[in-house]
Length: 365
Ligand SMILES: *Cc1c(COP(=O)(O)O)cnc(C)c1O
Image (tube, rainbow, N blue to C red):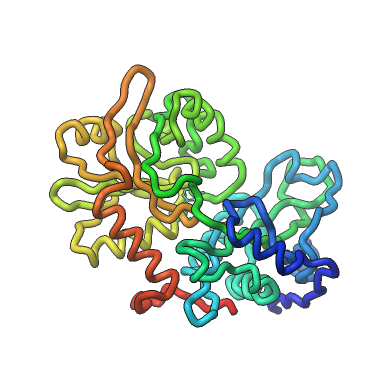
């Protein structure tokens, strides 16, 4: 039986004027809407007790398994307001299916697609006033964060028999403060985010935890983000801590690391492979040695490099640094022509400014 999400309204919602002030300058991940979705899974009952109630602290026993063994997964997608006031999301089924694959890898229960979609509509339905206006300046959206974790109070090591699913929502402006500026990347040579047979292809908190030391090392070297290599040989480019990578070559190939099981399959990545073809580029998924980046920038073979993901959409990549060396930026002040064209196309589809010929949009409210 499918879940339902009856609403208990927040008795003390944020005042209209305060919400308007937040939406004028939301930043990223700082403010949250008035409500959240919750549902419970137990080994005996399956999924039950879906509900929408006030956003607020959750009660967990200190022995809750997630706090010890990190049995947790999440998703990230956005709700976009179109010019007519309707609210849409971009390929939400792809997120639901990825959540199911992540669940299988982390030995968590699968949430059916229809329940996933219903949970998003339920939250956006009550908190629709939190979806920023298009007139409100460009790229604002409501970021949706579904997540699932082992809430059972038990210290034994086995898949939890009680699991909680939630969705929270946070109004979002531009992901990187300071606008569309190329990011400088650091090659993480001492720390990997994922290994063969591990959880790299699942969207789980543990992958982010293991990426932070590399990220920190990058920041200490004046970089914005770290790029991770395959852990087995330290030879091939994988991805950033939370974004996939693309290279545009002189002869119009659009190249991205192939999915080897240690790379997260981004919805943005897969959409860009489709859009690239329509732009007359030749999309390729293959292993890319890190030396190809260093040499390709020097020879002019690589024209543009960009990173992509739901939160930051498409971000130009500038300089690459490593212990004892660097490769210069190909991105100019605000990224190359192809980078910006792909970014614009994606945003035009998401905000309903062009026809959705791919059937990528789903109405939420
Ligand atoms: C979420 C994520 C991405 C981007 O995926 P999208 O579906 O495009 O948002 C890329 N890499 C990692 C490690 C991620 O967790």
